[in-house]
Length: 128
Image 1 (spheres, rainbow, N blue to C red):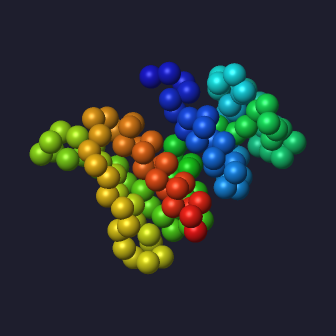
Image 2 (cartoon, rainbow, N blue to C red):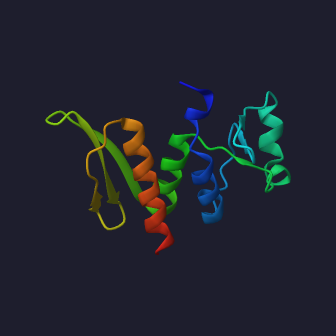
């Protein structure tokens, strides 16, 4: 596993920034597509707004993003394994409405289902 696989992809980080994601992160995405985890993490957290720029944006961990959507919008995304077909799927629950709002098709990997789930949540938020 590459270090950058721990963080949501750069295009998702951009979409999150556009939605107002403002949670301090451990790393940055740079324009050229590299991710950097600074050794002075505490200083980065203290200067969150100073460092936010178009050349460098936060690189959230997957769990940070799912937690943010759960707490801010009441949307819970779950990736599950279907032992019948050996594939992964996701489903979304709107905790405010207490209902499941979306099931996915099957995906061959957990990571693919996770990414599709996150993209679906972003799509839902943009239409609200």
